[in-house]
Length: 144
Ligand code: HEC
Image (cartoon, rainbow, N blue to C red):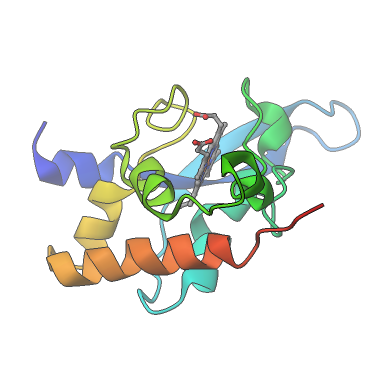
């Protein structure tokens, strides 16, 4: 697939309620990703991740219940990994290199191509996005 097509096939999503009140059935709507600053992990997280993983990373974003697989609680990644935050693993989960069963499927787009497009193919800026996002998730870790 050409890189251009990959870019256009990547989207962020938001949630809509079907006929509010009448039918509580939730649907995920895919919309084009809005550009963000590579300098702010927080801004990228809010724009691209919070819909599923939740504002605080606990896996309870508004889109979570419309997914077949529950989004991971990102605040216990360190605890699950012998109290070492898996910095590189998080970056490869984002790019799609980690080949997670759900990330990279229809339910969870991979972000490598999208970030590449936003940063016009500048590898250092793409790297900055990945590392700032991973650092932001590191700052969300909790021990209990
Ligand atoms: C459409 C919903 C959705 C969005 C948006 C989403 N994720 Fe996920 N994510 C999931 C699901 C579902 C899982 C758990 C399933 C799996 O392991 O593949 C997951 C798992 C993860 C994991 C855990 C990997 C592991 O080894 O356990 C990380 C890290 C992660 N996401 C980071 C992110 C980041 C960073 C973003 C934003 C750039 C993001 N996700 C956006 C649904 C989403």
